[in-house]
Image (cartoon, rainbow, N blue to C red; front, top):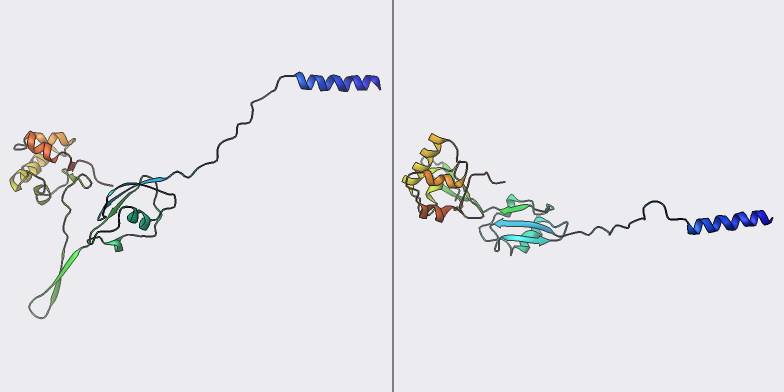
Length: 188
């Protein structure tokens, strides 16, 4: 019996003084729902980047941006859709339709799409722009717009917006006015 007791006490002592084996268990913090960053632009009162809670809907993002402008067309959007982090939410403007009565008792509908003028939020792609679109840029008239297209047709698509300065008639001062309003990349 003494032998058994001695072995038991020796085993307990060895267990207590022996170094720990393996790696300690590390507890990870609980995941937190970080806010979403969403860029709301177009026909809203205050376009910009907003931090919104997870599971935010399109309608909530519009409210965060100050609501819709009178020309906004919310019927083109799914207001109940859940937004995701890093999303760009563009609110379109309404299409203006006018009716005209022609001869022989017929009515035709003319839809007038008013293009948005180029801006930092809606830059103009100089690789796909028409003469009329380029004409909306400050300092660019129909003649310079035609020169831009002729240069593009002759030399291929622009590889950088700086290349626009190679077009005859595009001076450094004109380029400075428009460089933030143009792009060579298609919009998402």
